[in-house]
Image (cartoon, rainbow, N blue to C red; front, side, top):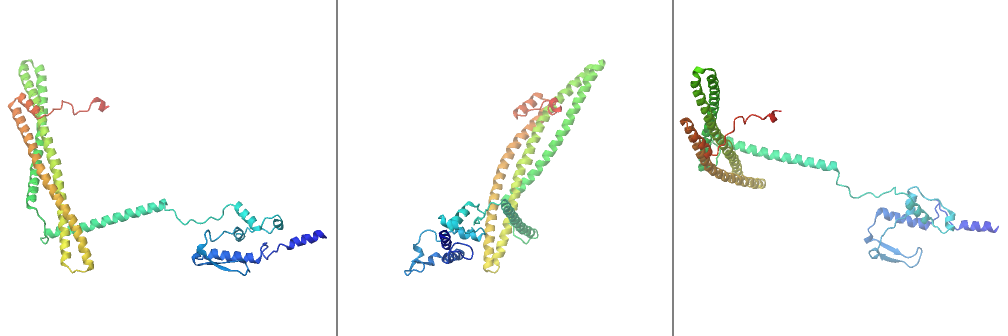
Length: 391
């Protein structure tokens, strides 16, 4: 009888609400208010807290600015119940001194973290996005380059046709233009010398080969014709001597041709390339100068003023480029003239002495001429590949 009364009393000590939780209505109301604060996120600087016990007589307003520490505390039991893992009421937990809130907190601590707060910072190291941005940047750069090239080509073409039909003004440096014309005429004449010297080399090489073949034939007949042995022998020796001197002269002529070829096709050509760049810069300078003059004579408004400033900048850029290339052309023409005189003086003297010594039959003077100008002859058969290269 006593035991039944004690068990009934123990059972009556724990009130159970409609959800099966062992909490009072005041705890539920407090927890709902707390969750509402967590959802709505009030401004703590404008919020006041009423201190005092529930239902107590003494109440006071405490400003939240003086409260330090977190304003919101995580409620693990409410989180567990909202996620569908609410623990069932255990009457024995009350008697053993373990509250339901502690039991729910321990269960949440033991469960794996299924709920992870979303990251507020996204990674910017996505390779596909980086490659796409790089491709877009290259495309924009190419488009700008094509746009600038198109505008520049249009202006230069317009200026060129204006000059051809006599409607445009052309910037001319009379002294420099005269030097350029002289260089072009000189290059044409030197190309003619080079072409004739190469023809002479080919013909003389064929003559030397013919003399060598003729000397071999005379030598063979001198062995087979006893009655004409002396006559064939003399002619064989003469042709071999002429062939040897001819090969020496060929070495001098080849050196002459090589030097003229370097002067014409490398030194002069390099100067003419600079002159071509100078002429293109002059055409661009005149095109942008004409554009600036046309804009300056037109009506003045805000848009036109911006275009005039842009055109003036482009005009100044091309003017600096034109003046720089004009200076480069003047310097190269000066050095080219000095180099041409030095090279041609040496080569013309070599050509004259070698030809004179050969046709005079002075073998010693011919060889001395080659030594004087440091001309080295190639040994016979040097052009042929060796037997190791043929393997």
